[in-house]
Image 1 (tube, rainbow, N blue to C red):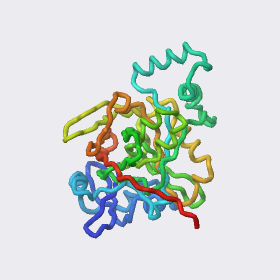
Image 2 (cartoon, rainbow, N blue to C red):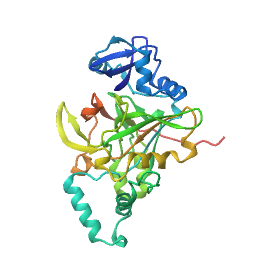
Image 3 (tube, one colour):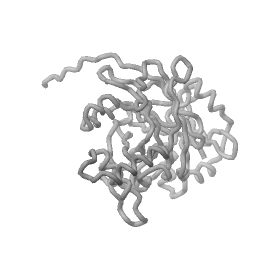
Image 4 (cartoon, rainbow, N blue to C red):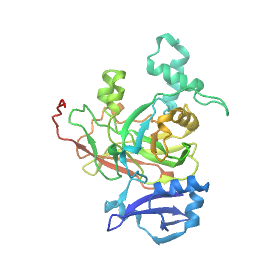
Length: 330
């Protein structure tokens, strides 16, 4: 089942479900957020709850996307209670990259590896623990709250001071926190973990600066298990034509960590288990246009797609105007 959100002519949210070959409004659903909390409180699975509510009129989701009526597939009434976070160095990459990486790890002693390579090796060795065991913690970063979340089709804003604004095609876990602090997974979605790779390259300690950027996710949420082997495509369009295009891999078959291990090391912190909060947690990638020397420009469109996730995620790039910020004493 795929679920999404559109707005009608009065800006009221309608939940849309794609199931059994049809795309229809979910009866009585005020939002995906409200549905998720209802499911958590009732103990009924989200897909079962949606089926129980039943369906209304058919929706042309592609047309809604073109009309700008397709919004983020989950949001929070208070943007400060939606958290955008992510983790890196979690993916193995292509077969050739994997082989060369393993050869390097086998040949080099730990003392000769960079910090990033050491962390990658830790993931290879202990990122997929057995059931009941704790795996190694991954690299982790914070991107912002709901004010940084950009709807599918809307521009990703690169700050005027940024050295770069590049895409990162990823899978994100979508979560709500129950009344007792239990994290509940709503499902999974495509995401663009938009970053400043030039700044990050200056020094890895600039990672935090490079990640404080917009992110987009959706347009649809896959309810249920994440496929083991996800094969998608990441594109940059300039003037309507492909400037750059490359396949990307995700899913646990292509990762050095299990999803459960990444979830554990995020939600082990009490601050991320506050009742009612929403979390969009991005799981990383091995495919970047930046690695191929591409520098996106204002007006370029990022497009991320994978068959299991419904409609592609598209966002144009926009450069913010410079703003003078002055701190004033009270």
